[in-house]
Image (cartoon, rainbow, N blue to C red; front, side, top):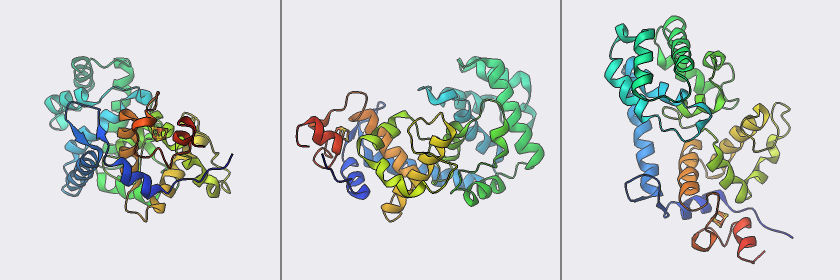
Amino acid sequence: MRFEVPDVRDVVMRILEVEDSFGDTKQDIYQCLQNHRRRIERNKQLVTASEYMQVLRIFLPDLLIRGISGEAGSKVHEELKKHIKEDSGLRTDVYQQVLEKASYRWGIPKGVQLIEGVVRILRDEYGWDWERYFEEAEAEKETNFISDKLLKVKYIGFKVRDLALSNFNANYAANDLHVVRVITRLGFLNYGYELLHDNSLEMGTDSAKRKNYLFLHGLILRLSALTGDEFSPSDLDRVLWHFGKSLCGARPRCGYCPVAEICPTGASRIGKL
Ligand code: SF4
């Protein structure tokens, strides 16, 4: 059995036309991508303008999503906006209140501990200089910013940290289940062989495993490069995530898929492989 690995840009261009079935608004994935790009640009302006509390309120909710199990961070974000407007709101009792009102389901003491850890690092070690933090993230994008002090805070792993970073830096993506599933079905893991000279990573799709996660991070940078940088890693992440939610989910709908004729899984499922 032989198959060709599809061209990354070709796949993305086809996927952009798919209607996104996630959320209430009817739009195609191209529009989701544009909204995502605009959001990153707006967030970057907040960093440049030293709006450090606003940046914190955008960054924190994603860190609080443990294991990315489908909990949207919007409730936490809303409550943070209401209760943490200035430095005086950076208190344990306020964090508790925020999480209670947002019906935070991963354990309020754990959430409070996480927020305290993040605030301690950004306030005491960075003096709220988010720009410096994001510059460090950019400088270490190839190695997934493993020196990040936030990774020492209990309950913060690569996945949630990268989700939070992806609001501000297009070189980061969370590599969640939906994205990794689509990447695997399309045969894109095959583009990762040239990363394997590095012993700190290992080809695999279990993003809970450090070596697999680092492989997936390297892979999405490589896929982005294969589009000639037309699509950033976070563009690819958003596009594949919405596609995974809309067409290529647990039960892929290959018969309706614009990628079926070049996708190895699709070709197999519709009997052309
Ligand atoms: S053809 Fe099927 S498996 Fe391949 S991308 Fe489309 S829905 Fe997914």
